[in-house]
Image 1 (cartoon, rainbow, N blue to C red):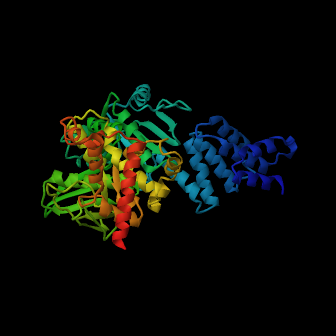
Image 2 (image 1 turned 180 degrees about the vertical axis):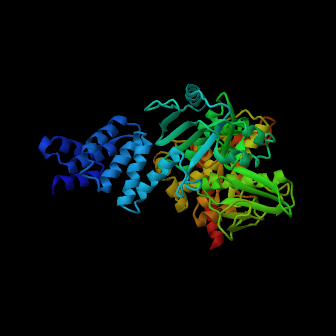
Length: 542
């Protein structure tokens, strides 16, 4: 095995330091162009996203051999890769395009090309809002910006450190958790009156069109990074745009098919500080009067890899229809759900709203048409897969101003989920998605608070798809208003724990179960009861 082959083996095993030590130990006359290319790759692979020195070393090693490797797509890829992480995007784009010329169909090169083009604000058949492209425009009344203020606002409002590798008066480029953020001052209005035309869609802001006409320049904001989830990229995008909204001459935010009022954008973004998704920053919920009734559509779901949705020609209050679509969009994004043609969705056990997929009416491309039905007072606000939601219990806690932590609203949901984790009753999809958490939790259940996981990762929801098929049937049997039921067993335990007199006292205001201390004793008592209910259910089936 020669050294080149050995380097390839080390590279496959992520042993980059061995490659560096072996090649650098060779005499200069034995350091061939091929070995220099391998050394450069090792430096690139060893580097962190912001490790500028190692990427510069890679370029220095590769550059002298440009003529030798002019037809080698690997050399061009390595040059493009190093320039990309040096944030020299134009140079990187040229190298990655050469890779595709020499090696057609290279998927990795195409991904980098897409990112580079998004970052440079280019438009092409490969780059639009359908490829996870978080790109938006902050409209300015003057051709000027306060870059230092933006850096300060990112830090003070969102604890984001905008550390530049190379300072530029008209751009701010920095990295956050393997994502790249670029904010660039564009010294002209958005061409062809595009922003003004889309501002007309904002029925919440009567002055949107007239205000938008006043813009003389704009900030182009882009967030890139395939290694981060779409949700994380989307959150970072909203935070950066919100910070830009604090610029002195800001007029509006052009994104998601409309122009938002700056204060509306700021208020909606603030929901992230309460652990809520910024749905109204991501998605525009368009409303208009059709020939036969109210119509509503989403604009922005495709950025997250989801179909846009429409409700067409219904007799209802416009804002009721909008809120209906908001609930569905929130459910889809919160749970990474995919709605399919021919399926149904519902907000109660008895509701079955049809879903169809066809050419869009309100906007181009294929969209999901959701059947609309006004909710009765007893109907809930969540899809039919719902088992329980912490919001129900959190609302009681807040309305009655109970003197306990809000995390207590998640107590019994955490107990139910833990029992199923310990009995390996989870669905394959859920187990794969949260594999790291489950491994950690099984090793030491009290090393992490499962209630926080429910709040921050599952948005306070217990859904049937989290569990395997047998456990879904068990939940339908045990988690509801029938007898026996898990909520009733929780309530009975509270009565036993506090005693009848205290259980019925004014102190608890009918919510004694929220006051039970969360801990191992509570879990073990309830786990024994769930064991019994499971056995009873199994016997009843046989």
